[in-house]
Length: 533
Image (cartoon, rainbow, N blue to C red; front, side, top):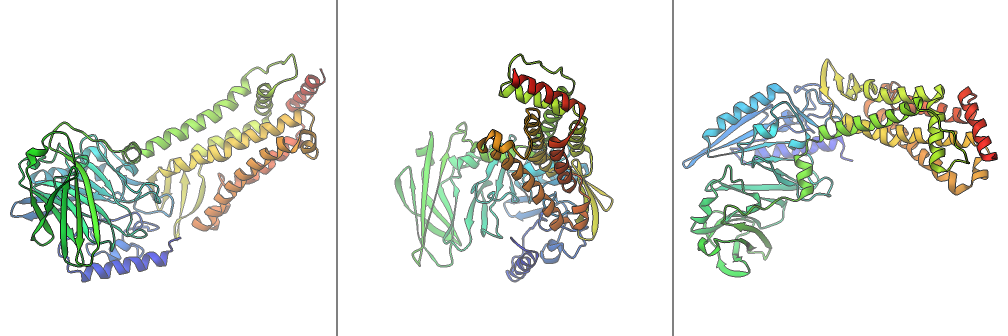
């Protein structure tokens, strides 16, 4: 686990390197780790303000001017203020004021040759006011972001493209995996390469650019057809000795250095005017280190290539909406089942009940017994409307957590990850508890007692069920421990959804084997008659 002191040291080293690098033009953005566990931007734990060389919070627009045009770089700051502890700082928020500010910056950038937007959060993890962050940045060539990085190594490449054409390019993290990106505009055509630190040479093919990463709405792609040279940027700590180029497996020769890291090789683009083609570049430096780069390109206008489905789903889906739908559906299904069986007429089997009939009868017994119906119904509804816990959402500042958001220091932070946590609560605890209680009631109605039911029914038919419920109970207990470690003792004791639910669970399970409810006695008598017939 990456500790607080580790983050402080990492940011300190970063600051020293930036200041000593003599980089005169740079940009930086506020990220979720900078807004982690801080009440305001003036907090001493605001590492961005403490260590960044730029130290500008909020959205901003930097224009890089050259003799051949200007290029806009727009920062999207969706970090939470105040910034709660994990995990509830996972989503960023853009309110209407923030969206309006970004729309104004987008309007300013129309005078630039190209515009690049950048920010910490992916668009899929930003709760945005209308018309939405993707629509606001639709004039951008690309949006550069982090946050999800490689999803713990599960997705080494997370790239996709908005419906409006803007590329969304997630970058692996620097903190653990030491990933970085080089990018360039070549005649207003945007190219980039994601690289690992201290792997040399670093190579970027700028012309012809990769078709997959083309943005026809913003880039003058026709310039590739009119170009005279293949162009490559190659960097290394040693001198570059060779840059070999081939297209479709045919060697074209060795690109030559013109100035700095730029290497060029004459070509005839009309030889590749039809279809898709494959360019391959092999770069070697004086120490013998070799790196190869390749991509697919085309000079035609109507040969679209599509990004993989999974990265597109991860980057382009508004997950905060999806998890809300799943949460309310899970609650609706659970609550509807027990309410329907509460008022549904009980069936009268004419023969010993089978598995399905027994399950239905147990649901009837459960729903028609006030001892079980009301506690579970209210517990499920409380998951939706009640405060989950009261604790230190920020060190030294007590707040309240609901499904629909957090309240801390007079600020309301709209719910996002809370809906995912709520869904896990319903699926991994509320619903399994309901099923387990019904199963216990079914055994009770069939004349079994707690002490002897394992012997009477068999180990294989009982122990696995108890183990599943035990795992759910352990999961809920771990959630209580997490509350204690993260949000303090207060959160542990004032947590109806977590800590109190464990007490409720023990009481309800005990009642399934000891209750003398009149409805339950009726079911026990009927089930004995069915099995005796």
